[in-house]
Amino acid sequence: MKEYSLVAKARRRFKITTKANSDAITAPNKLAQDFKANKPNENFVSDTTYVWTTAGWLYLAVVMDLFSRKIIGMAKGNRITKNLVCNAFLQAMLHKRVSQQLPLSF
Image (cartoon, rainbow, N blue to C red; front, side, top):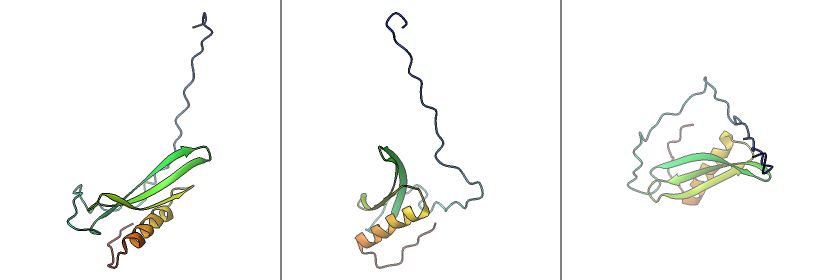
């Protein structure tokens, strides 16, 4: 390596982006890994992720209807909060024009 003036590139250290709260209440798993739906608006599921951009971290929450397997709501923000997920669900409910009360548990 010295002969060719090559140097090793150091890896960046892993940065912890979340802090687990052992006192936090965990929502029950109501689907029990059964991701089938017999009709539209029966089961909505959500997930959050983050993406590095030139402006910094972008956090994204999406909501999917298990019947159609389509994304029906999403929200983005600069912090991962309850409001981020709630805004994604609100967008999904407005998009699907859900009239019945959905059993949400946060």
